[in-house]
Length: 248
Image (cartoon, rainbow, N blue to C red):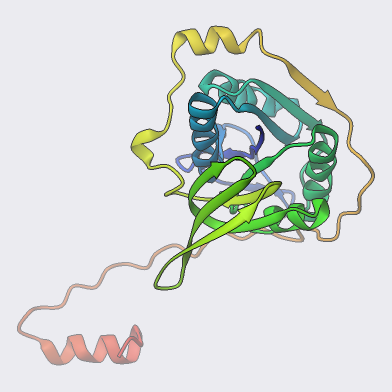
């Protein structure tokens, strides 16, 4: 079984976020980048298929040369090879188009992507990728088993879970639950050294339109000061909750 894991190169959640050029561009200075958490759950599940069923695992990213460190980390975790599409991932459709070309050229049986990236939270790419490749699609996936050319997937729905069957080729939009946080792999020294010798192929992008454009970014409003109300003054508390907070 050939598995392709889509990897987004995203800012660490502990990084301080700023914007430049009139809040139209993200300021990358001093920002630490990591594997998108939803993608890391998918990568760990793919490595499990490699260890248990002999699958071959390739990771792919659409991005610049700065993303290669993130791909090398994925290789150190256990992926067999990596692909970088040399393009700026500015638009969900553009990214899906590039990934679809990689899928078609590689004839992958299973494509695992995070249901959304931590930076833009668009949630568009996995579904568009499935449509472009004609594959079955399961989003918000929290469980996956493969038996031959058949798959059993569990996905999160409002108020519960849904178990469904599908055939390969299959695209998964994964999230926490596909594996648990305790099961995530930390690269060891052997994995890091081995990753240096694994193949990292750079491809030029195929033609595709950018259907959307970021016009302006805006940070969330800072939290207001906390108001303390005496436990003996319930009338004041009710007044603030009703007229100021507007929660009752």
